[in-house]
Length: 548
Image (cartoon, rainbow, N blue to C red):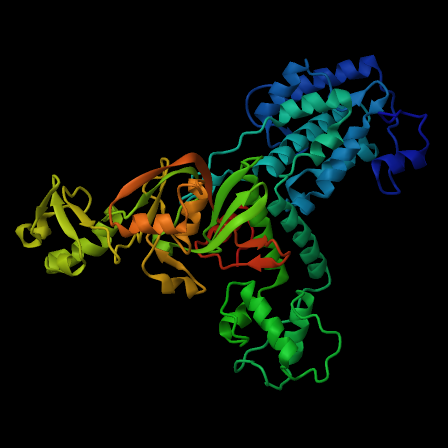
């Protein structure tokens, strides 16, 4: 059965198929060729012109696509046939009512208006045309949201350079309607990425927690640690139990900060990117007390960013998570390599973009980037040109060396300097021993670093935009993919020669610079990180939400 007929469907079947409340009633007027023709005429009138389209005060989201969609079908109704409203309308309505499962607010869609008509308010072609428009626009709106995002990445502002993912929702609907496959089309729209699916599961769990009142707050006071005994330990333990960090069933003394609670605090700290010392100080307490509703908004923001990625990722690719200070190399859906990274600080953020790693450079020289020259070095040179030698930098003009004191630095433009400041390859070079070259990356690249101790810091937004790697040799060997020629010993030997050389990769490796503040790791553990660049906050404000 593909549609709901006017009179010959018993009410209980009508309710079962449409999942409507008990007061719903079938349409009380005949649907035939004449009614469909009149409805088509009403549709033509309602969307005439080129401006906005509204239905009973509800402004439709995609007027241009609506016009194109109905013009192609000569204004024939999409959701009504001779026997009545097709079942696909009920499937769309139910999807809209469940849109929060995908991190999309139900309030974005005219659910109440659709129900108003579908529950018996239709008494003629005009109302039928309005319902048809509401359903079609809702499909286009929801489809675009769940496939490509509520906002394009570039609308977020900042250093976001991912292209907008165009999606032909009207074409999908036109193909699905004749087959009565709207439900299947809707189900296939959300991203198929495992990272997205895992967040969707966590979102459901957090919503259930919010419905039960969320988790308790841990009060202010002195730091809590192993051996502490006071009343604040009670809500601390309950807070960690609700988030799955504390799993003990029997507690001898609820007010005692015992060993199992210490392990739970350390687990919580690790998955929030904090120092896992087991001490509940001010920073840990702030993370503990962040309301579950704020975590829900955080997850929604990250699900949105998953929608901005390609629908299908390559078989092999690198993903750098700037907010998580982490790099993963994926091969066939499995992490083949992972490491800690150092990313740009807030004033010099690592941008979000996609590129390809094309080659690697051994023993690279470092040419001071314009931003560092302008903001860090030039002001010092204007005070004392001798600082250049202390910084172990050479001054070049047209490829020739100059003495720093031969230049009047007070007259050098901060934005159009003819000079190059270069640090030769060596143990103190900021790029370390290896630099990974990216295609069309606007000066952003991956590289080694001599400052190895920085990788032990929990917060690693320390660079001027490029990404420093914990294990550059391991990444180089994987990308070179030539074990008969390159192994660790031979690569170290080539580096030891001190000669700058470029090694093209046998195959370019796609790389995605992303920004995840919430994700589920390969062990199934929910991870949260600080919104270091305030991208979550910016996105939530654009959505009109309260970003706290």
